[in-house]
Length: 118
Image 1 (cartoon, rainbow, N blue to C red):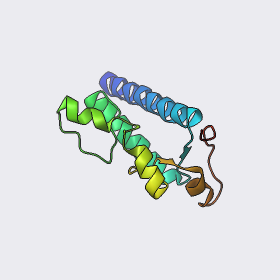
Image 2: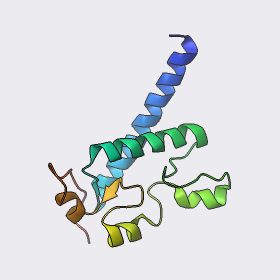
Image 3: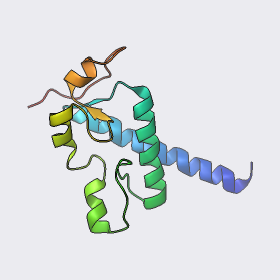
Image 4: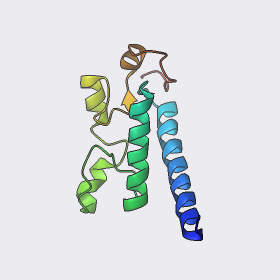
């Protein structure tokens, strides 16, 4: 493995750690859970990490990054519309965050959730 490959790998690992800290911190502070589907969570975490590496922000991977900073700001995770998505569907559009009812309805075991809703 070349020095450049090693540097790129370390950069990707650090970006992934930052994304995971953000996501888990958000869940711990708020009323939402992680989606109990580990595959979905992994895909979204990978997309958030990719966007952090490519664009410098953890843009929701379910939305297009346009390059227009003002427009793209609305797609930084957790995006402003995630609360309405969860209220309507039980999960946000990317499906990384879910309400407790959605998470509890999915096997095998519901993931840890944040604080009780106020």
